[in-house]
Figure 1 (spheres, rainbow, N blue to C red):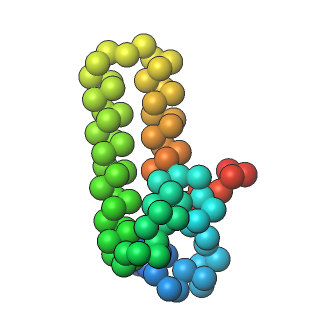
Figure 2 (figure 1 turned 30 degrees about the horizontal axis):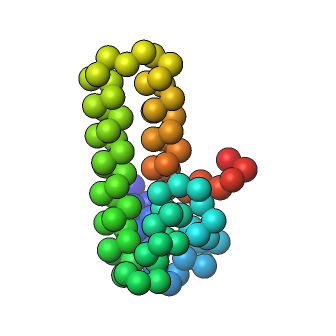
Length: 93
């Protein structure tokens, strides 16, 4: 179970070509921050930024439920957050 999280942490460093993953082409938070900050910050800083923004989206979605929104609106928010925080997302997914 431990090798999987370690593999995810190393997907943003120089070895990412080993995984055949191109985060710059992903329409999610990871792709956005990789394009925006990838050349300027370390892989660790990039991973921490992605994690912090993902937690922020989860908190936002949880608070939306507490506001007693209609089910269809809350479901749409959850779907949007799920897509944005997914670690690996391609356009055809």
